[in-house]
Each structure stands twice: as structure tokens, then as C-alpha cells.
Amino acid sequence: MRWTVVALGLMTCSPVAWGQSAEVVALQITLDRYWYSPGCVDGRLGPRTRRALQVWQEAHGLPAHGEVDFATATALPAAPPLFVEYEVTEADRQQLGRAPLDWRERSQVPAMAYETLTELLAERFHCTERLLRELNPGATNESALTIWKVPNTQLPHAVRAPSVARLQVSLAQREVRALDAAGRVVALFPCSVAAVEEKRPVGTMTVTSVIARPNYTFDPENFPQLDPVQRAYGKLIIPPGPNNPVGAVWIGLSRPGLGIHGTPHPETVGRAESLGCFRVTNWNAERLRQVVTVGMEVEVTAE
Image (cartoon, rainbow, N blue to C red; front, side):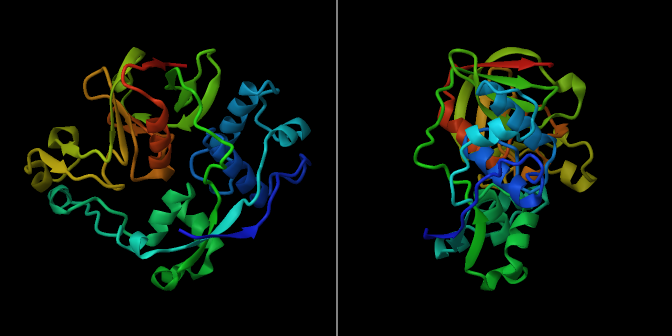
């Protein structure tokens, strides 16, 4: 992996100009670096970005209004460079493969791989594929493009994983909060929750397992919308990979069948559409894997 500085960028201290796309990208990258995730970096000032900023402000003793004022712009360190050039390697290209839609075909591939370089790089650098294409006009012919301009979401050396004592999942806010021993929110990750309200558990449970690169057991009983052919397949084991239905990481909880896990569809995170689990982006699932331990308390709240 080789890096070259493309551009320096610092958040403006002016509350008037910051809403422009470049400043929003800068804000999203900075929040992401410091473990207060806005979801995908996309250059749009949406509710997830405002929420991440609001939680960061509250955790740092500032008025939690979700706006960039002088105090916030001064306190939130947007360390340059905000964009870098990334050179695609042969190892990257070897990660590409097939991620079929048919469940039996899924069970037969060696891995549920990335299908395109754009997908791989968007996930690696925590952004939408749309933003990546805007930054790289040549991405329309991605096989010929070897140098990509990408958001610099890699953590600065000064940023360490926070010390986490417990997790809190908010069903109303659709977010996973990591709290330290004093109860301060030290990391925030948007999540999806169950589509059916009856499958949204409330209460205290514990982490029972933390698994990187999990496989997935397909049970047609969980997918009544499938066509008769796929419903007749029976249970199947889907191999690991970023396009596996539970993504890059599985964090099992003490309620049977329930967990926090990644997803192959990062731009859908924050919706009420899961079968019951809490979905986060694959990169946020990887960060959670760094700070959770078996036995850790997880409180699920309706608020």
C-alpha cells in the first residue's frame, strides 16, 4: 500500500460556509477518524452526520446542537491530509470475485467477495460509491484505473481505540454507543434494527462471541418473500466474505439468534429492515471487534 498526499484540508471556523460539500466531507472524515461514525462519507449533511456531531459535542462538554460553530471547529481536530492517493495492488484485485443473489449459488462460491474495485475501495475508505466516482472520473473504466483519490479515513497514529466498558443500543436513534467506565459515549456507530417491531428486544444482555469473517446459515423460513425454488433449498451455509449477509464480523449476544454484525450494504445502515439483529457497516463492525469482549454488558433501550 502506497500513499501520496493529494490535498490538505481543515474545517472552516465560519458557520456560514461549512455546509458546502467539501466542508461536509471534511467533517464526516474527521468524525469517522475519532470513532463517532456518520455512516458513509458522502458529502451530504444528513441526520446521521448531525447526530454524530451532536454526540461528539456532548461527550466533549460542548453545546450538543449538531452544528459546526466556532467552539466546535476549534475543538474538533481535522488533521490533514483529508484526501490521499491510493495505488491499487494485485492483492486488491485478487479480492474480487462473485457474490451471487441466488442462495444455492452463494453456498457454492469460495467466498462472498467484493465484485468491483469501486465497492472494495468505497468500503475500505468508508465512503459511498457515488462519492468515489465523483472523486475519480476515470472510475467508469475502473479496471484501467490504478491510482484513486480517496477520503483519508485511516486513523491518525495519535488516535487510539477508546477504552469501552459496555455497549448501549438505542432502537429509537438506531445507533450503537460505546461507553467508558464513567458512562461517557466514546464511540458511536449507526445501526439498522428489526423491520418488525415485535423483534426489537429491550433489556440487558451480554456479548457471548466475537467472530471475524463469519459464515452464515441460510434458513428459508426466515425469508417468506423468496420464490418457491429458493424456498425449497433448505438450510445452506454461506461462506465468509464482505458480501456475506452478516458481513465481516459477528458479535453474538446472549439472546439466541441475536447479534451485532456487519452488512454488505453500508448505505442502508440506519433503517428498520433487519430480521432482528443490529447491522452496522463492515468497517464499524471491525472497530467494535477491537473494543468488545466476551461477557461485556449490552443494554438495548427503546429511547
